[in-house]
Image (cartoon, rainbow, N blue to C red; front, top):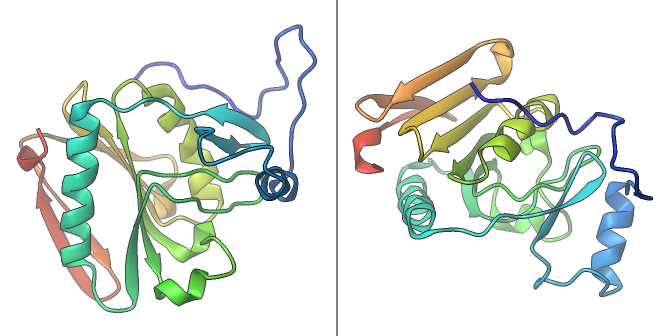
Length: 191
């Protein structure tokens, strides 16, 4: 596994940098300092640029969005590239399976504990996506997938087994339970 970026590190380049709270980050959006055209997210207090997406990334996100929307049971919603809120971060995972209904999130973003499954599709963003493991799991996300397009496998992190990582090759089928429904996906459909 390649090196992981430590977002909690106190190391910073020899420039004046500033960390932001979640409330300050939201306020920057409300004031128009950050706009929808700014491709950024808040990770552990740092405002971080989001990566550009290639065609393979777009295909995988569209495929998984359609697949999840067709398979999640009642009482769950699928959201695509929208924020969730943790204690120190406002990441925008490629996909999230969230407990509740759309109107539950009229006045707030889902929290980590609202999320059953988060998915990041990774090509050029692999280090950053791996850096999010601790952010997501410590926020209460039950399961986190990184679809690694370069190595053609899926990395599955479960909150009840933080030190374990299960890697599924493109030839395997992954199964997960959402509510009382078990769903499965043949990964060869994505590669």
